[in-house]
Image (cartoon, rainbow, N blue to C red; front, side):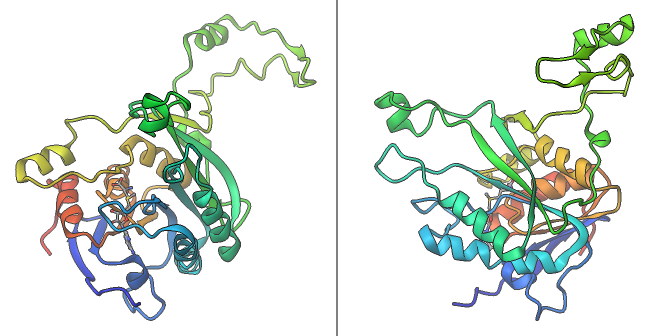
Length: 304
Ligand SMILES: C[S@@+](CC[C@H](N)C(=O)[O-])C[C@H]1O[C@@H](n2cnc3c(N)ncnc32)[C@H](O)[C@@H]1O
């Protein structure tokens, strides 16, 4: 069934536009307003839940096909050097203490259809995650808390634009002391890695981060939540923390590059892109989520 048409620009800033629309409609090759030249697609698609959530997720094999159908659309708006970053939560089979493989199968099918490379897998450890699935974790005590989601970095080429120099993290105390001391126990390790005397002693202005990212999305005081509270708008139930979005935008783009979130929800991606001076374009069909997301941009909004 073709999607119901809701397409309109809901709001814009100097750097970006939020469309109230379905992604398949806005990114369709027959749409003259379809964007192009996208450097990064950063998104959390509606999760493949085994029960329907408020925003109407597809279920089961239908979901695999649904996600797969976006591969050619994403590929066609992406620059050859661009990347796609997809967050996918874990899901569980209904009534059984068994994890669903649907998210993994959907990802593989999406990658196959778009002929994407898997550049790197990341894990977002949600430090504030409640103990779920409750039945197995807190009632029967036969599973542990499910506290991370996968974030998959895909790209049409094996060497998309990226620089880890843009996401360095502060050195640990011990590393600072080591650099200051100028002494490092060099030589060949049991792992057969040969550590040269100078390799670890150069001050590179920060440490290279790992692919395990820790963050919570509980801060009650973001501009977004304050705005929703003031207007009685229910906040989006599955938001990505802004620092996670910022990490990928910095790693994979430069100022003025275009970042697209086709399943924008509360528009965390647009908010992070705006803060980092990247152009952005976000798509979300749910009117209430779109209205709430204006809260990120209060001072940046331009008149339509
Ligand atoms: C997991 S949420 C995204 C949350 C977002 N990353 C954030 O930080 O708020 C997925 C969103 O996709 C939206 N959605 C569902 N079907 C869609 C479609 N066909 N096109 C665009 N968005 C869609 C849902 O309304 C939902 O808000």
